[in-house]
Length: 234
Image (cartoon, rainbow, N blue to C red; front, side, top):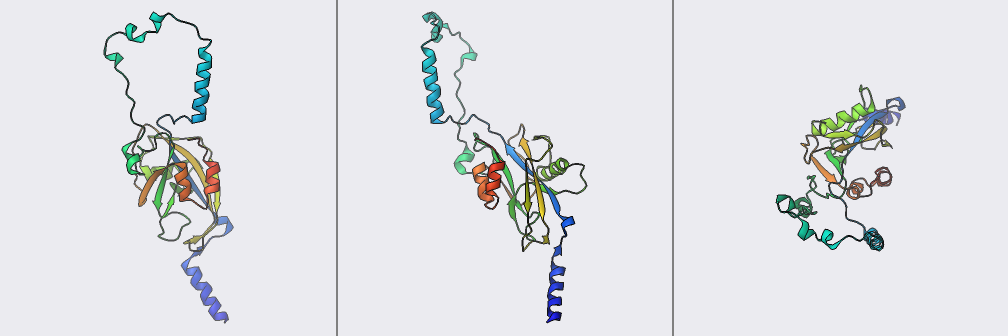
């Protein structure tokens, strides 16, 4: 019986490497977001209040001569008087639900998720996750986060990291089927898209740009924490 237990323990050790408390892994993750491109639609309650405020102020406005208010008569001629036609709020990417495009959900924030192997998952198991990297010899955790994002998009010239401190912190206990039974301490940094509407994603099997509501569906176990961490009104 003792020999069987020793053989079983030896087989487990050879298949999976155990980590001590001092070998806990620190991971720098990046919440890469695209800010809204257009102004969100006004809430009906807010619109009603603004309409009421406008009509109330109209009672006490200064009266101007009719000749001053007739824009059609006073407006000059020229190309600068061409009527402005706004671009559509719903894009082709919205119609086709193309989550690989940044040209969707223009009035809301979008976040980048990568599909592929990651730290803490089973060997060769692909899962959805943020761009991330194990902290090694970088000078700071932010430098590690920058390296993680750079490995995904290739260049950081169209990005902006918000501050030097992480916006969130999660402790991920090891999973039973993980390659290494180590506790992962994930520090999440925020970075934003700057002056571009397309990136060359070079890492992972797939990627998506999702809204906050869609993002929470990808992480059901951490949804409650991520909902509090990601503060966005749109």
